[in-house]
Image (cartoon, rainbow, N blue to C red):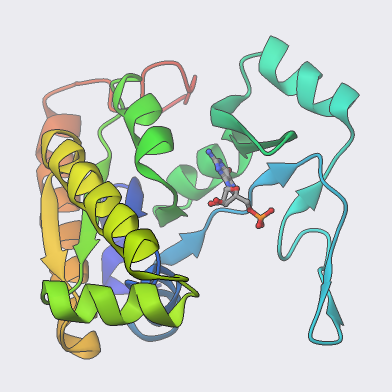
Length: 216
Ligand code: 5GP
């Protein structure tokens, strides 16, 4: 049992512009801090093979049929979902319920649209948006991710600026990823503070996750 197991579990939504390091931060939280579990999305797309490695069901995604996806949406068993380029993706509720029962911080690496859907649920979640240290760094990351020409770069930069503006209304914390270890520490501190506050809310008898039908 780790020290965080005495605190209530929570849902942690982690977002940020492409290339900011969301997956790396999530991986380090799980590996180094303890008490974190990462959500595995369901998807209707086929597993892909990249760099000689084929995606694994239950590790990269849970690969399901469209019928199964429809059943999950009809039964209100997805926290949020989206159609991306013709394939369906979603966050299933059941592993979240299990993580909350186990007093874990359930990490969801997701875009602002998905986060906005979750905001609407009234869950006591922690919303953290990662920022690159400055515009030059962001531009460098955009270039590394294959921006073609000056026009393309400008379009992507202004899309990021608009997203950040929207994120400021949705997320509880904006954390700069300049030094990776510092960033991981900052995110972890916010999560622990949040979970301490949840303990108080729980003692006061508040329902922390309406619609999840938790028995506690
Ligand atoms: P890919 O098929 O390349 O793995 O992912 C395509 C897109 O789907 C990415 O932008 C990814 O962030 C998004 N995606 C993956 N899982 C989920 C999910 O559970 N919910 C939502 N809303 N989007 C997801």
